Image (cartoon, rainbow, N blue to C red; front, side, top):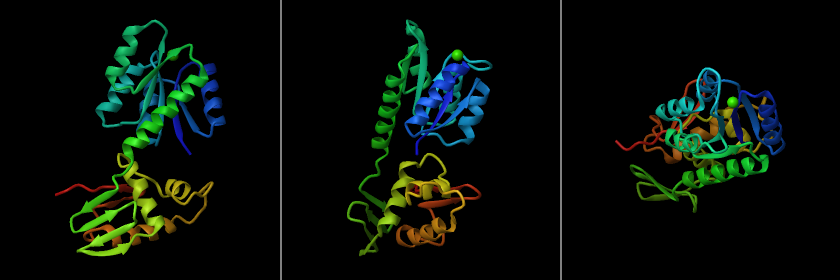
Length: 231
Ligand code: CA
């Protein structure tokens, strides 16, 4: 399920956006001022952000600049007033991916969000072949070659690795993995140890040294993160 952060101080507009995106299967969180937007964006996981410019406490521009300066790359669409050419330029300069003019058509806004998500997914598509020191992974053929000896990589382990690579700029929780890779409709109350067991198996296949993971990192209390960096 896609998660969306809506930053909008006008209750009627925020409500309308929340309803429209929830209807299309998104989970929607609303922040009503610039400070709340930053706090929420920092500790939540969002696939996309819709960001109004005129906000109490901190403008949408400041929110955008701050998030980008902190390394947050979440696709963000700014809501700008019609005719304010300068705002659109400033929004894009601040790091926004796209903008939609107010008053907007909800259909257009949904289409823009989805287009940005697709673009992001394509940018993130993991390369077909990966190399971790003495380990080569072919994600298409699902084959791992360790020191020249090929071995199958089972489908779940392959999907788990792909998902972590696709979301490598953040920590992925066990619950999220259960809901996406395992496709549980809702992972509330599901035994998250399942994920841990598969991570152990994945590490045994792809980590140059499974005892000292560098490909799939554990983030204590939060989940897992793809962490490969060449030394
Ligand atoms: Ca506003």
